[in-house]
Image: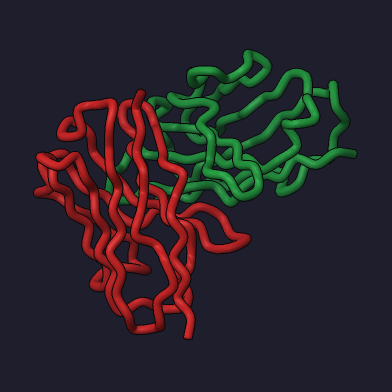
Length: 109
Length: 115
């Protein structure tokens, strides 16, 4: 099973600042099958990035994804107040063992 | 518009059974691999089960193996999850989702296992 470790667990920043969220895999992950989600309280996860760097439909261009192999990054260039929620990474290359990171909480400093 | 809508959640006693359904629309359902994912209250996301396009191949998380059964009816554009021998730790929001080539999810249905 591929374990995804997200860091930091909580990130404290101010609106307008840049956020960098990390997702590290225990073994190499195909970039084609790495996704990032945003989750607000009481809502389903919202797809932000798939294929490591492709923005989903309707996602603002302040969200970007990068990385390969075992290290992936979600960057939010200029934080808006609505961005201060929870973020998960996911690998779905192996259909029999899809895994998620434990999440990074973005909080207002 | 691609859409999946879950239903069938509710309150059930430990040891009981429940069947979840997922109705698909806006895409050729038989061409997509499907999954169930759950999220316990205050916890992270946990993949539960996978089914191939034809339904001939299925996989399960160790936590539900032997208790849950995933199935699909391509003629009805529907996905199912039969949950047996339910435990309190199965309490969660259950999501229907497809991941390849591009992920999409439903809004979820809530299952509560409690006496």
